[in-house]
Length: 123
Image 1 (cartoon, one colour):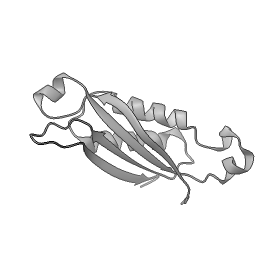
Image 2: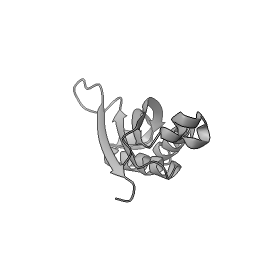
Image 3: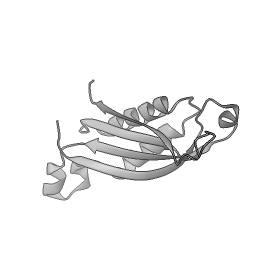
Image 4: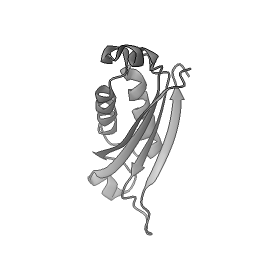
């Protein structure tokens, strides 16, 4: 397993997520962080994008997964995001993501509510 990690932070999107009626009727802001485990030695040696993971492709895959349609739970959304990241490049050995609702519908002041998961390729 690669010890190298690519970190993508603070991707802000608008998604359809939640169980409450008002969450089903309108989208809400979310924030996504992604960690990618991949051997970066080849890209470091050649300084060529073909030997590394394209961050733009990862961000596009995350955005597509997060905005594909309504889901009820953060657990489902973050699992979809991680699966999309692993599908971007077969050299990615593991991916971890956290998805946060930035305006969770709770009756007290809460900055965000999120779920984090990590998946390894082939597991």
